Amino acid sequence: MAFKDVVTASKAPAAIGPYSQAIRAGNLIFTSGQIPLDPATGQVVSGGVAAQTEQVLANIKAILAAAGAGMEDVVKTTVYIKDMGDFNTVNEVYSRYFVQEPPARSCVEVARLPKDVLVEIEAVAVV
Image (cartoon, one colour):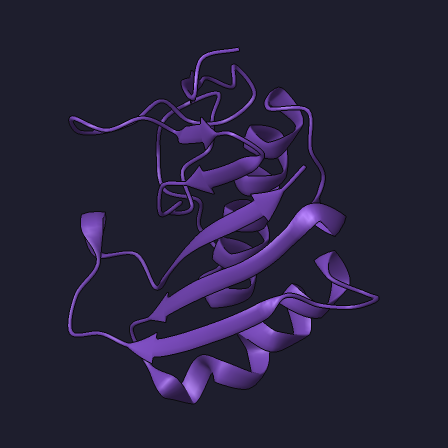
């Protein structure tokens, strides 16, 4: 394996810009920030911040699987949310994906996200 490999997951949405879904560097996997795009349609999912968080985490899970990893391998996430008032709702969904030994995390409220979504998450995993 080369030191740096591009990870491509067919079960996650394609990149909407000049970036890779993830990069594997040695035993680390760095996902790009995932927004709530349905991989089948390329469209933002409807249903509010809970549905959007669910889709974002499903996309991350698919990308990690393509790299030979799982959610249990995630050591750090960064969560970007449009409204800190959605913090508890995001946590409720997030906690279903990271049940035991959740990763370190930062959460930041931002003015705007791509395609005007409500949440974006990036992850770092170790395999």
